[in-house]
Amino acid sequence: MGSSYSTSVADFVDYLEKENTDRLPEQKELFFNQNSDDISRKEVISEIDRNTAKLKTTEPRYYSLTINPSQRELLHIQNDPEKLKTYTRELIKDYAASFNREINGRPIQASDIKNYGKIEYSRSFKETDREIKENNPYSNRIAKLKNDLRKIDRGELPTSMKKVEKEISELYKQAPHKLNGKMIEPGMLKPGPQTHIHLIVSRKDQSNSVSLSPGSKYKASEVVFQGKIVKRGLDRDKFFEKAELCTVQILR
Image (cartoon, rainbow, N blue to C red):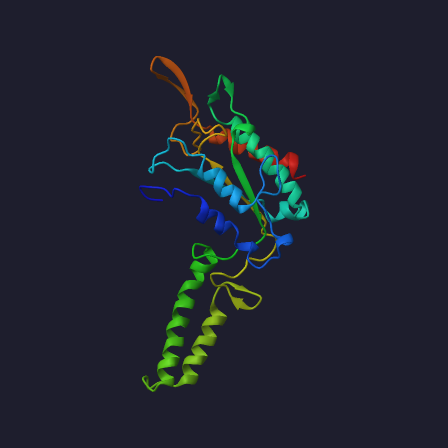
């Protein structure tokens, strides 16, 4: 966000490592790509950071895509990570095919896309979630009342502590969204299967010479540049349609 972009993917990679924090080395979920399942954090950072030839600070070095199967789909495949990896690899093929570009006179292929995937198995409630927004009036009032309790305890407020505690109890009961009897708050884990895949996709192709931007304002089209017809853009509609067909074929 903003007028410039980070020169390294390290912070984002570290964010994606959050579920590995308390795991033993043999239990950690590693990154994967089209050819490998066991890619380290260090390798991902190195490969993405050095694949940035001729990019300016006003241009992104990488893009983040998220694959979000529904809970119904996850239950159907029994939350199988191998099926999700297979789906992701097929999706990269569709992603490549949706570019209206050529490399050395041939269509872009999955082998041209430098990408790394990471499976995560949980999600937590965030401030932007509907449940949090609708609970906010209650949680804000509760926070104020708890502050009042501290003031009462210090003798700064001439109010009955029991009265304030009763109001707090009522607010917890009235909050519209609860989980296991507790009011839903930011940071609480969401229930049910929440497995999803984060993809880090380099802006440059594997050769570090061609720029491939899914964020291009140009839809698949052609333009005359220096007397030559140049293809440009990504057909997002085509990509989304292929992603849905891929779901039917792989996650069945």
